[in-house]
Length: 293
Image: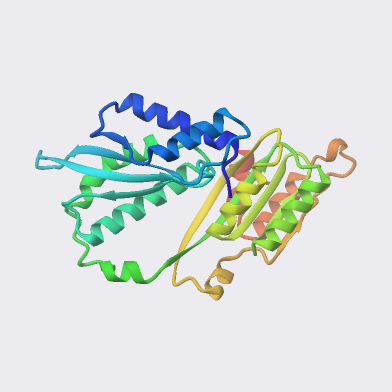
């Protein structure tokens, strides 16, 4: 799926920022100049060929370890076409890390980005995180933990995700149909509350939730954002495991009309009770910043 013009522009401005902050080749180097040239060409000429490969680069980070020596971590990075709608691909390495320490470091970095930068540029933040946290992994003794390097590579971890999306309003019939159809196509459950404000919750496989979000956010909205995101790692993660995590059975539209209210304003009290029944009452607070009644 190709980048939109907007996503491509965000990538270029972020790469420009990195090269101005880290002018030396040993700190920041684009390893695929052709991909970068293609991306720039695509942005400058609306009709240009879409890039055939993602931009790849290396960020090197020197950081002090407790005993005061310097260690270098290298971050090998690639920006998927849809970045920043999806996370960057980053692998952090250092000669001082064992295989299992490296796996843990990379998985923690990914979790940090997932929880904090849904849909936003995050390369600088990723670099900061590595600078602040990576050295601590060098001394981590993982023998006590059950995770050995071979386990980590064999058992693919499946992530179950629940996205809580907030929109200024949802009235448009076509958008409402898209929300329901796409959720069905991607095996997501949840609910959509049309009106003002509009609330959409989808849950299911992480990749399916991310695909749903990248489609939804492409439509024209006055304002739409992910208000909250939940990610649960499921070892092995078969169909039954996924089903166990769900709080909703299908995706349905919920209309909580406030009686006689003009402009389709929803009755938030009814929404609160609905969320409470599903064990999601705390979410109400995140959306509306007040305790439900």
